[in-house]
Amino acid sequence: MNSKPQSDLSDFNAALARLKRSWQQGLLLRDGARLAGEAIVVLTIYGLADRLLALPDGVRIVLEIALAGAALTLAAARLSRVSRITDKQAAQRADSLLGSRRRAVLGAWELARWSAAAEAAGSGSGLTHFLIQRAIGLTNASLRRLKFKVCFPFAEIRRELKKVGW
Image 1 (cartoon, rainbow, N blue to C red):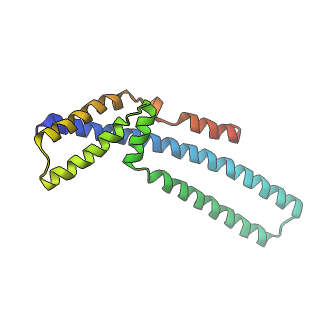
Image 2: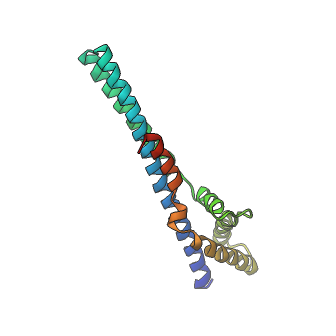
């Protein structure tokens, strides 16, 4: 195999990883804004309850520990969900951002996986490999058109910030 097809596959994987990373970073910001909004509401309710009910120190300490634990659990769950985004999901998002009804990026991702498995098993013809590499090469051009401004979920972050009132 010459270096051009390998370069196409490397470029494809790098572009997909870049899209996935920017998407994950945006989702983390969105979830952070959501968590901040939820914390503001919960702490406001807690403060009002403490003011109106004059909670004893022991109850206040237990509530504060419970609220901190709940916030950490929510943050960990959201971090876990964002970190589990797969390359397949990133390929689907790329197709969505590109408006691709043919799902070219997902198809190229699946072909790349199949090609790697076939290569490891020593099967597959030269024509098959050529066609796969060509499909990946054509998809690279589409992925290069996706800029950070398009990949990063600005609208979702803005929506969460508006809910919080920022």
